[in-house]
Length: 251
Image (cartoon, rainbow, N blue to C red):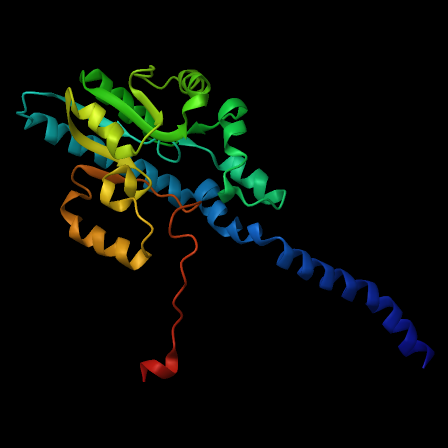
């Protein structure tokens, strides 16, 4: 009996630790983002996809430019976050602190003091477009009040064509800012990680099923003049319900 009691006493701290760890996992909901963040920040696959996207964008840019006949000068539009610059260190820090980064209450401070790195392939593409004498607009939903900080960050990373005139931050919709670019230029390519980086119709609160329908409708653009960058860290899809295989229903 003494041996049984002793064994139980030894096991109790281990059981308590396991229960506590499980409770902490349940309480810390942002930990759910860990797998997506590992993929976005650490996987060789995402790096390969980023390089692939920019290499393909370069090939398409050359083809489109060779056949450009508009009276307006050509321009390329790029998003910034997760398209030109990598912000995952902020997201990882927030998750480690059990903070849900999708509340975006830490983002402004990151814009001011953070040190993002470049997305693989981004600088080579931007430099090539610049060498061809083509205008680049950066249209991002970063905070307008932090514009000086964003300009400073981009210049520190040696990103070309960074100025107050062509870095258009959050004041009005992205479509309105694209219209600013269209006043004097013909937008021949758009690159971004979210669908609303490409067209106003994607800026909605509809289901992912509805969004996928829009993608099917606009299929001719993707891989042509719209280039989508991979981003598993955040997006309108993040709260969507997953579909499981039902073996019984399949029979």
